Length: 354
Image (cartoon, rainbow, N blue to C red; front, side, top):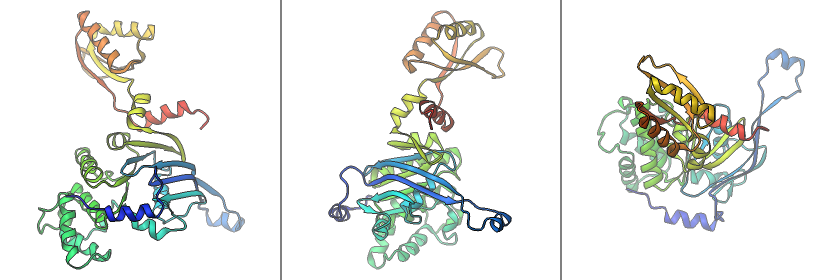
């Protein structure tokens, strides 16, 4: 079931929405004063030292896009979300949502955009999913006959319509996350802000929740989604485009496919019979393989290596074919998933001045 937003979209267009971007940052800069001890404050009471959290950030997010902000803790992701949510004002630059300036039109921006708070303590644990949503619908001014149908609609969207009278406090972590998403959808927002939505989930639950976000929220609901995460796997699995942030600066901005091809498609792991080691080392000496590194696997019959392989999968298929043709066994050959550390290393290597 999907929400109808045609009337809302017409209103936004009349308000002067940009043709290309629904969210746009221009030279966005924000600093915060550093905390000082009482002794230092007494010695220099009027001195204020600041740390820059975001520095001249400029990029745009398209309507309906699943857009990722990827970076380590302290990269500036949450600060960007706070500025988008009108909780914090930028020091320099500008920030607009559907043509509305965040500083000049905060009420309009809040009507378009909803941050998803992933803290399940904000739920009422002694209420069912339906009762939670009815409560929060009332707090958002959704009352009367329409409130009941809206709650049912949201429950179906997030897959909690059959939980009955089960209390939210007994939900799994994944179910609680879905309920938090449902609460955010009550007001039919056009933009959702997700800040580390899977940080409390185990790997299996996290993967299922990411699939739910991609299929139901971005796909069926048509929301524009901004995801802040430090997980490269999460960003590359979910997002259409990714902005890589580092110390408040924009290091890279591209589609997931291009980022992966540029930085991550050359790293592979191979497990071969012991006799194949000399062949791999010979290829490494000629440059056909780069950065060949032996891995400990505890198996005396097999050798395992990690390597950079120019040419990607096609070249890998040729190497496996040559090894097998020479009479050597190949137990496995797989591409190594790109980690945030690998991605940052790759981007920083291309931008040594940063």
